Image (cartoon, rainbow, N blue to C red; front, top):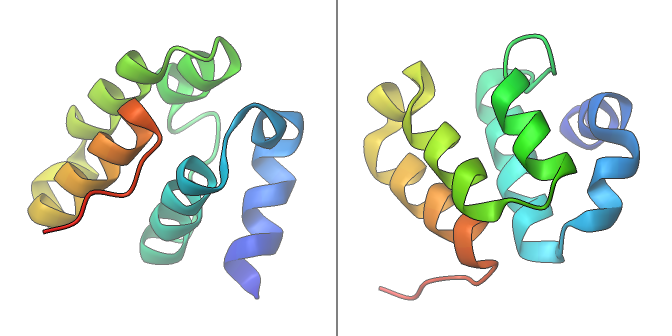
Length: 88
């Protein structure tokens, strides 16, 4: 799948610090946007490298992505923040 290849290419070792739920957020964002590259999301990448999940969630919400996919972004930010899937 192209999203998986793209995610591995640009996130590399940072994926090792994420649980499956957080990795799924990055995959979902990559699938929807085509890429979540470091140069386009430098603060998100920095937060993930530092395992600062609260900041990573904030970066998702402080983005054009969030204004475009509103509900999906809220869910993805929540998952990134606490590492858990939220049931409705």
